[in-house]
Image (tube, rainbow, N blue to C red):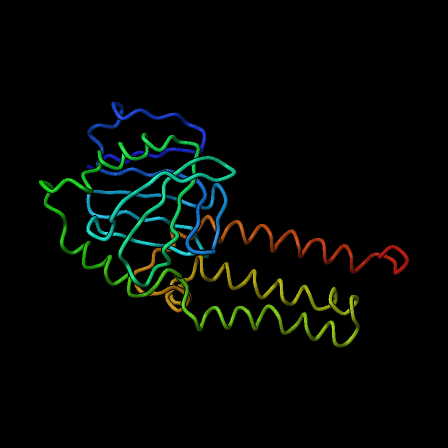
Length: 236
């Protein structure tokens, strides 16, 4: 059985506790190019075969040990972390993971997985899969699904504005929000629809946090739009 270590944003860590582990996982924030995710929407995951940073909709990046030229300290408003320097042409150069954990602790725990240990026999099938994921680019969602979502979200709102300005917006906003809600729920729970939305070999578990977060936002906006719609005109 693999040893899996989960850290949250505020816990201190020491290498001695995890000297036998072969998977290291920690939650935080991060950047992939200009895209940003704040805590707790980013995850760093390292095994003996792969290092990945998952920012949900903002992007996912996967590395074999040979793709990484160096890991250097990085800092942000919410803490410190690591910057991955790499040779993958399909990824932006700026790939940063931010957490409250000291840089040295992160590095030691990454080393403890055996990722950079040349004496470890790495799984060739995992390395091949990483290369295939790199070829897809950083975004986990298919272009066609993104276009459908944008159109389904914006068209009712635009119709509302054209018909009746702000009041029209709140008349049609529930249609857009209902579409978004249905799109998210189908992606989470209906496998055929999920396969249409996600790129090949992408795992829904890596996106659940982001989808649920978006679901909460959509539900809150939907409730607000219904309340606003029923307010007397003088109170709008």
